[in-house]
Image 1 (tube, helix red, strand yellow):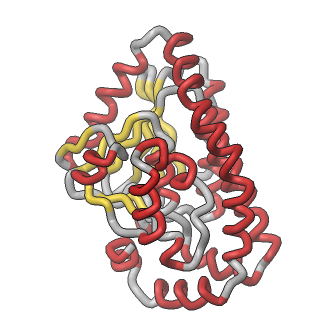
Image 2: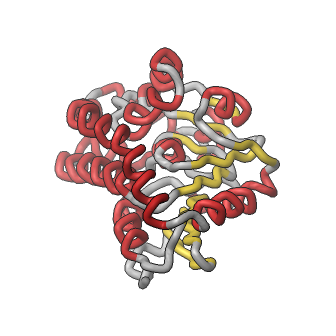
Length: 266
């Protein structure tokens, strides 16, 4: 399979039956700009068409899984309605494409998973976290409706009350708490995250292919039904929230901090 059509900010490496998908913008903490967002949306169809692939590992280059959306684009979307509409549509397509992917997906959360990064982890099938990593969905804190992944998946993984607490308040969820809450499957030392993720991906890859794929599809029908119910309203509301004064104020404060501070405070 030719993955070279994707942006260089998304690497796909072949390791036998595994495909290692790496968000590759470490200097920007793997924040998802337009090119990476499009690549993340397109890669799932390519993976399904890859006849030799049996399981996927998704991770981030450097010390961060992903800092989420590229913050300067938030201000762009406040002023540019066309760009805002494109981003919202791309967001919906990414959620549906990832949830529809038939291959088992293991997230190797090697560092902070914030916003869209947190959504990518929660839409995976098995999540391994570094013991010093955390998850956070700060949409509401910066003035945006939480339109995509967390609103679709978290109520299935935790309780509705827990999902509301952490999505509305945007508090950080340390790895140990994520394990307790059902947002990850294993917590290991940071140096062991990728190896552990590959270990479980290989176990998934060794299963009878049709049985594994269609069982995953059956389980993910719950999430796809949730996406069908939630996404139209949530993303329409997120579109509106990009036009509010709140997003200008909160993002201006956010951009006053360094990228590292932004992740730490998310």
